[in-house]
Image 1 (cartoon, one colour):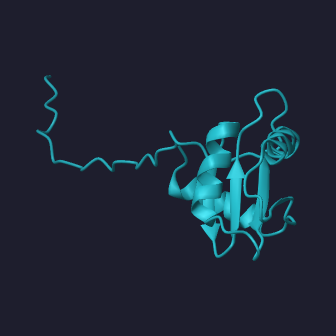
Image 2: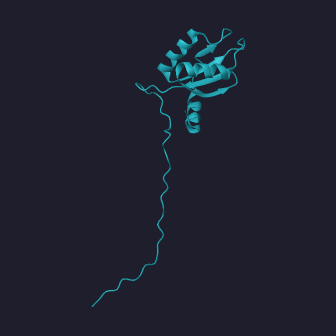
Image 3: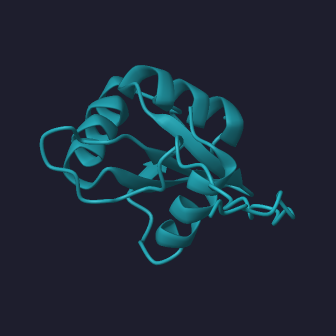
Length: 120
């Protein structure tokens, strides 16, 4: 599951890469699943397109490919989709971590304490 910050980062990276997976009139076939799995292992982030002659819905195609490759759907826009799966052996893309929390410095209030008495 990706956070919105991670999705935004991956969308930015995906805008520069070309479409790799093309879904035609046959829809999602076993060959397309194998091609997607190989591409996601090699690149971690892939972009696909559902052709105009396909009867399949982009959301359904992205959901089916994500389930069969065990990847995350970054987004679907128009007839394009973006999938991401981290390669544990060779990580190429660094995404912002989920556990990063902003730590605020707390400014201590200065209080007037009791004066120090010295004895003679």
